[in-house]
Image 1 (cartoon, rainbow over the protein chains, first blue to last red):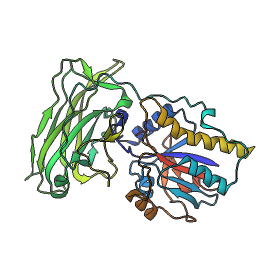
Image 2 (tube, one colour):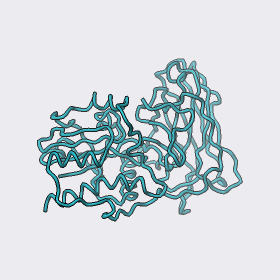
Image 3 (cartoon, rainbow over the protein chains, first blue to last red):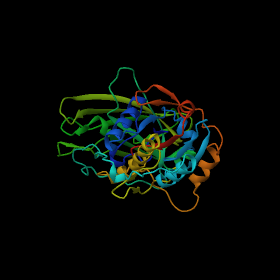
Image 4 (cartoon, helix red, strand yellow):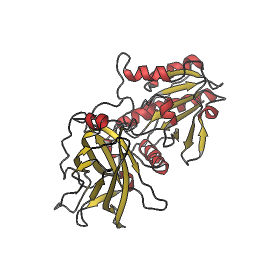
Length: 285
Length: 88
C-alpha cells in the first residue's frame, strides 16, 4: 500500500508568510519545506505549474482518493479525514491487529522560517470584493530568483468591467531568507497601461523607515480604467534583495504582466493567529 | 507483517496532519473548511472527480526531483492513497 501527498497551489498565501511560487523549482522548494516542517517520510509529489491534478480534483485544497490495485477509485472525499480513511482501508483491505497511535510516532515538526521585524509598515485597508487576479512574472533564463513576489488583486468592478481598484503587494519570499534592507533604499515600481487605458498612480515606492530591516509587504492601491480587458498591464519593479545571513545585497529589476481576470488558483488571503479571512477578500471561486 | 507495516505508514500519514496543526506557528490549512453538510466545494468535487469504480485521472505530476510521474501508473498494482496538500 502506498501513500502520497501531492503538493498544489497555496490555499492561503501569506499564511506563515509563505507566498505563491512562480516556478516548478520554487514549488519543489515548498515541498522540501513541507518535509522539513513535518518531519514526514510520506512521499511527496507535486502538481506542475499548470496544476492539472488540482484541476482534476476540482481545485479542492485537501481532497483524498483511495485507489484500488487496478487503478480505479475506491473512495473519495473533499477533505482528507484520517478516521474515515482508516475505515475505508479496513473495509477494503481488512482490520489490523494493532493500531499505531499518533503519539507512538516521533514527528520532528519544525516552525516556519523566522523573519526579521514585522508590523513595521501598516497594511493597506482593502476595499470590498477583492480577489486575486492573474499575474505573469517575466522569467529570464539565468536571472536571479524573484526574492520579492508580486501579488495582485482587483475588486469586482475591475474584474468584470475593467475599471476599479487594484491592489499590488510586494511580498518577501521566506524560502529565500531575505529581508528589506531599509538602508539600501525602498522598493520602486512603475505600471504601464495599454493605449487608451489609465492607471493612477502609475507607480510608487515603499516608505522610508528608521528601522534598518523589516519583512512587511509593500502594498499599494491603484485606480485602473482599461479600455481592453484582454490586454495586460506591464509592471516593472526595482528592489534590493538582501539575505538574512548578510552574504549578499543586490539590486534587482524584474517585470510582470498583470491581467484583470480572476486567478482561480490564487486562493484567499488569511492571516492572523486564527487564520481567518482578511477583511475585504471574497471567497475563492 | 506486511499489513502491520502498512498500517504504521497509514497512521503516520494521518499523524502528519495532526502534526501540522500542532507545529509551532502551526496550521497548514489542511482540514480547514470541514463542516456539516455538503458545501459548494463538495458539489464541485463530487461533480468533477471520477466516481467510485472509475479510473483515477490520467494526469502527469512530478516527484520531488522534478521528474515526471504518471498518477495512473503510480496508483496501479496496490492500494494507493492520494491527498492534496500545501504549506498553508
